[in-house]
Image (cartoon, rainbow, N blue to C red; front, side, top):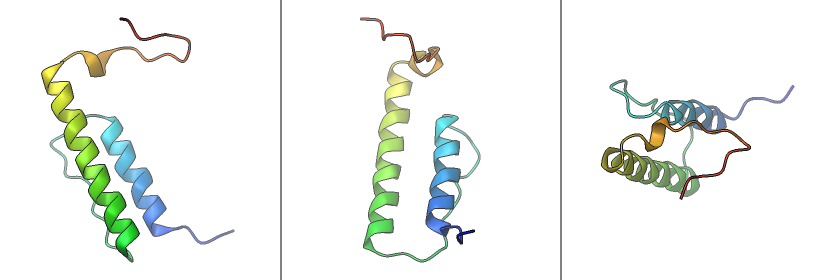
Length: 75
């Protein structure tokens, strides 16, 4: 079995927290090996999450819509 990639494990944990929506719980911190790529990915994810949470604050209820694979967004 392959050794788990610490950054990939961190991304899985981080995306799981982000998918739950804004929370008072702190986000998991990555303390593994870094380079410009990991720094760039983490910075981009922080920017995306800030934009998503800001958009959800402007349009409450958007994040509460039921998401089904066969449903189409309402226009």
